[in-house]
Length: 371
Image (cartoon, rainbow, N blue to C red; front, side):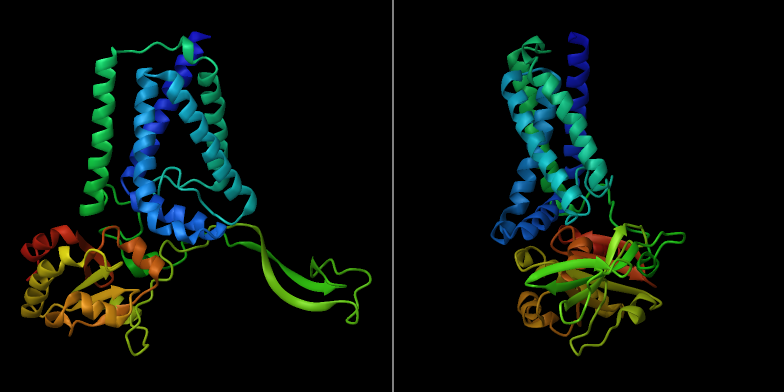
């Protein structure tokens, strides 16, 4: 029995550390997933706190995993892990059975899991954690209290520092479809051999004050226009396919309303796209961006601002010297996906991402600007 408990402890500890590290590579991804849940539940007021919650949850996952491996304060951490896995299981069950959330973000974007896979993973962990919870007294610490505390503090500090680094300098491992070397137009195409969604035509009619739904093949026997009043018709997905492009909703619109996506993504020669997510960080990149702007002008390299923010807001952020830089409006979700630090400079050539620079590395962009 003791061997089984130790195996469970090692599996749980390693999985929690691994899960935390994968998410720590891109805490904004978990933040956006939290926003997705909050918006479904109508808790939009919490969206401003999701990044903080994301960072803290990731730190806790890593520290809890280390504590379980060390066998330190098992009564406390077995309780904490049990509460956490019950919460995670609820989230994955909600995603699976409600159909309102497609993926849960358990291992971030680097290891995408379906809602069903996430739910089964959490059930497996729940069984292991229950085994630990009811037998925590049989688990002995590996090291003395001082050594264990030192290792926990080290993991705590490393978790915070690593997340600060990726939020400042971009994720260490880029698992998104906007990574260097990828061609955006190609990623906007449906993959070859993809399986489309299987759908049926569904109708919703009102009968005697009650909405009734049925498919085109199963009209009620008493159907009559005098009894049934049409509400809507829609295509109901009965089996989800995978016929979705890696990049969706990436459309670049000029202030006059023209779609310039195709022209820019097939433009020969170098071009810069500066993605701005929100207004919060402008003081940290404005001066360095001006250096990029001046050198790009000198080398006749086009520069564009890409954002979902209003044109007036962008002009106020960048100041008068750069107000002649064209602004391209883009979907907010596409900008958030492309912009994993606020902000990011992309070097493009014929739709291919040649390089990208965090706002904190714009000086490097100046040094490496192609001739």
